Image 1: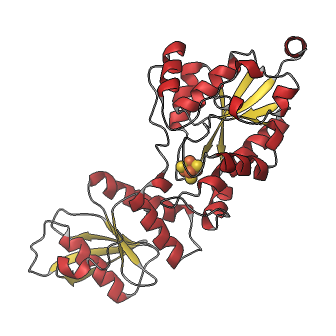
Image 2 (image 1 turned 90 degrees about the vertical axis):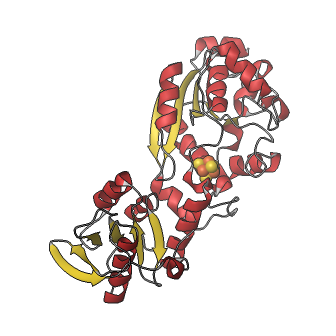
Image 3 (image 1 turned 180 degrees about the vertical axis):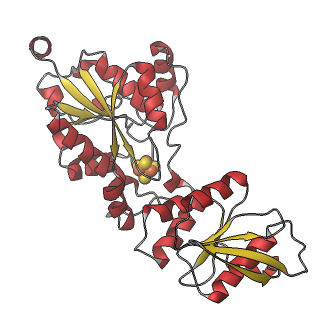
Length: 334
Ligand code: SF4
């Protein structure tokens, strides 16, 4: 009956697709059953779709890119199931992605959703209970198939309805990658990235900066998140911080991201970093930021130098001495 069904009506599946090996294999397994597969990859300022786009192209998968920034930020500010080791709210994030995939399934009148999740692969987000919670909270539980671990999980609706042949699904579990690597060889997939890479929310340093941003301003913009990716960050007081570029690429990025309300500082006559005070600050703050700028510049450390401070179209000059390293550690967000 299942085979007949698939011959009469084209079955459609929506696959959450990160471009990592597990998502590639899940797509391959479902495609091999003659299902018309559409991939969905999610983007936010914390993870991009580049890896997914490259992998989709290689395996000939049609891919939809969904920018989920707004909904993801809501989840990130107050995750129902908390954070992982860093600022990664993996259970809530997975739930949101499944919700997005579910909406796309409905829009495209597809039959089911699938993911590359492997039972027991990640302690927090892929244990049996987490897989159950994310599916249930997404609102699409019965439609969510995990082809790599399906035989270890309850039967899903597409399997019961014969839209997917359960016999041709797998029973992989755990952190080991042996089965996946063998399958990759079988399918001729040679270039694939490490699992779980590419999400800034799992990065300890980025997470500290993000926590600092949350603590001092819940009224931030996407630009403020972008700024967390560059430079050294110094929390000068409750209201202000300074960001000092570490190389020419970061200096350019800080310039590019700066806006009219920021103070942008350079040291006159000496090569050195771009320093910005996002959204401006009082005189003492600007002086502190200029002294940081002088410290990381080539200016002599024991003499006063001139710092050029620009705000929009107005430029002012202030005289500063380089900050003393021992005095600034307490400002450093690290
Ligand atoms: S690692 Fe990042 S992208 Fe992946 S589920 Fe966790 S928060 Fe979401």
